[in-house]
Image (cartoon, rainbow, N blue to C red; front, side, top):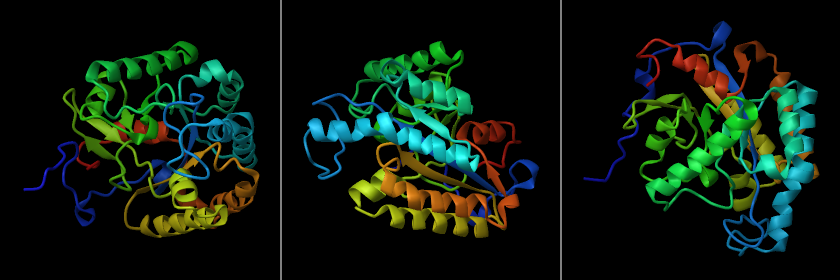
Length: 296
């Protein structure tokens, strides 16, 4: 028999229960804004030229562009279109770029735990070390914001065999690490069930623009195609749309023009009354109040 996971149950789409989002909406739309800091000359280091390049001054500066410049372009665009966003935040941003935190607070966006830095990943960590990482990141956000984050995405979306257990035990309500569905699903942990909110590997700019080398215009077309298809499917079932944007990728000026066009297409769509423009915290809060049996 094939090795299998025990985190979520088998569930096929035609057998799902039906429900709606608030006010009868059928499509929940949210944007994941990844705000990250990296170590200089060491650690994990995505690169704009070569996925296998070692840490160097060039890839550090490229990523740092996101915090110096790119994130401000994205915030301005979201303000222009009156769009909320979830901020998937490395906790060391509090030390390196407090101005970003001030803008998040003014916008009222929720902060999602995203580790200490994306220069490290949880994969391969011993349980006590991983628990320390999660605790430090969580307590930093709680200390500055007055409350702990509700959701978590691991740096690099990496896990160990016990990550969901540790996330649940740390008090989180939901996890974004498991791209298995277009609807929220329950994950099993040793401390009880944990909600999985859809977060994309496919509609994700680092995968498409950096590793698969698609242009900004091609990625924008993907965003529109995903929206149109999920909007059509939402006649039959509730679904979640998420686009994952990184500040140093989608915040580049030449990618902003097609991104703006794609988002304007979405927010000005004739069927926008079927869409719940929201963030991941609100999706999780709504699901946690639903009666048992509706969420797979």
